[in-house]
Image (cartoon, rainbow, N blue to C red; front, side, top):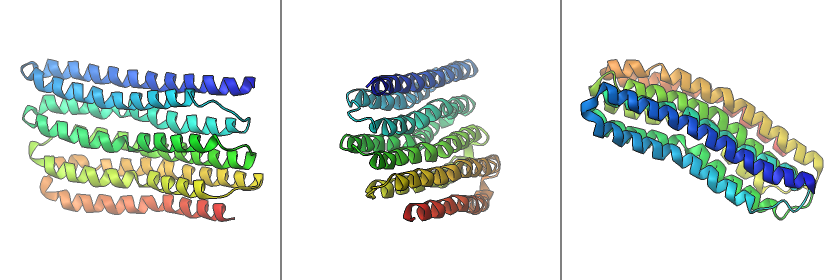
Length: 312
């Protein structure tokens, strides 16, 4: 009973602490960038404030999701010792994407503020760009929170270790598969936002390239999400099968981390070229997609291995 209470209350406290701490650091970075942008463009203070408050609101969304998850988990007590394993995995599935996005994602908002200071005539376009890219970036956080809720609901009804291992595998899958996309998306959108200040005439080309590359970077997380759904549909009756599912989660999750990061690093390299030479954007975009497609094959290999392990 003591361990149950430690995991229940301590995990909720750690979830709130890590999520809110990273969110505070991210918002501090945004505030610093806003002050720097205002110093560069003191006559366009209203536009910079508009982007600043929108960016703060977007950053605060992750903290609100973490707050909602913490409150829900606080009022969902652990009623069986085997649920401890599930609860730890659920905490990981929420904490990992929230911490990564709330801190790393703030860098792109800071770059948007600097771009607005450099290109005051593109303020509305930069604001729209930030809204779209940040919304897509927060997809892992939203889906991890939704599936954490589903896993917790199912955990209330389990009393056996195999079922607990099955739900734990689903939580581990979500946590691991969100790491690479969160880091990759944050890095890529940061450089995309930075490229907006290079050439005012290249906004349309940058926007289309960014949207396509974001979708490709996020593909490994979608593979993990689909596999999580498969895991939740299985009927697990033995401990060995439950351990097998955890191994499958480790296999796929481990593959997705470098894939998304490598895809983001590769695609980010074309952004300065697209901004400087928008007439060459289609060729650069096609080459970037071609490279990302080959990089993503590693995630598909990991998916094949994970499905083989699951079907064993």
